[in-house]
Each structure stands twice: as C-alpha cells, then as structure tokens.
Image (cartoon, rainbow, N blue to C red):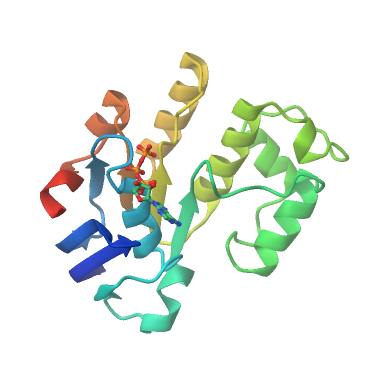
Length: 200
Ligand SMILES: Nc1ncnc2c1ncn2[C@@H]1O[C@H](COP(=O)(O)OP(=O)(O)OP(=O)(O)O)[C@@H](O)[C@H]1O
C-alpha cells in the first residue's frame, strides 16, 4: 500500500504554508516530517488525514476509495482531544463502534497496554496530561488501521513514558508511520526524513 501525494498546496489567508508537496509514502516505512515551529508540519498531517482540504493537489491511497482514505488512518496529536467528561470505557466503546479499534480490545487489555491502574469510573479530565497523552497513543497503537500519523508524540513524556512509547512503536514497523517532530529520538526512529522547508 502507498499514499501518493501530488501537487499538494495549502494556504491560510494569502500565505502558502505548503507549496507543491509531491511524495510517495510506502507501507512498512517510517517518515519524519521536520521543520521549525509554524512551518506546516501539523498542516501536512491534517491534509494527509483529510481533516482539512488542500487548495491544490490530491492525496490518493492505493486500492482505497478517495472518500475513505481517512478510514485507513489513525491519528494522535495534542489537538485531537479526548472527551473530558467520558471514561476510558466510554471512549473504548465509541472507538470500537467506529471500527477505529478492533472489538477484541477490552478495557482490561487497554489498561494493561497503557500501564494504567484500573479506573472504570474515572473521567478523562481526572487523568494527568501525560496519562492522557498515553491514552491517545494507546488508542492509535492498538488500532489495526495501516497508517499511523503522530504529531509530536512524546511531548510532555518523562523518560519512562518515552521508553514505553518507543518499545511499542517498534512493534508497528509493518504499518506506514509518519511523525511530525523536531525531537531527535522521534526523528531517529524514522527511516526517511522530510524537511517541510523544501515545500515553500
Ligand atoms: N486554521 C488555521 N487558520 C489560519 N492559520 C493557520 C491555521 N492552521 C495553521 N495555520 C498557520 O499555518 C502555519 C503552519 O502551522 P502548523 O501548525 O502546521 O505548523 P507546525 O510546523 O506544525 O508548528 P509547531 O511545530 O509549532 O507545532 C502557522 O503559521 C499557523 O499559524
């Protein structure tokens, strides 16, 4: 499977954030999107996930209906929020119903995977920011969708949480992984490096 991106451009007001981005992303490969703050890394991930529309260009996924590209993608980012007033179990129920997570994932599996103490009735807003980040990443890593988009995944993580994340990410090398980052360990995990500055 591959993602073919052709002539992708995005501007906000009159300013191009990304201009003429052409690239082919391959399954079983990993890509770091790098660039300074405000250079367009998150915008590129959002374009790939079809969260936002481009001004020009296309994103095609081999063998997938163009309107269903999003259904092949998992996406974890600081701005993709959990629902504060819901519990972990309620999130799990929604994500299973939407086929984001396999129905075989139980609350116990999830809590074990993300190393959390059982808390059936604990609301998301009562978890720390690092734990919430772990929950988001846990959902993305437990999904069986073939494309994994991660925006600054280990921001706010301590060393132990970073180790937790990279051990599990290593087991996902069969997916197509794209990480927007300026953090050396995240960049070094990836086989390919793409500087967003080349597409201005
Ligand atoms: N919805 C929007 N409306 C207007 N401008 C936007 C919008 N989204 C992003 N931008 C602008 O586009 C530019 C790129 O933002 P983006 O968040 O993609 O950068 P980034 O490289 O991910 O930054 P960071 O490293 O700080 O997370 C910025 O100048 C930002 O202000």
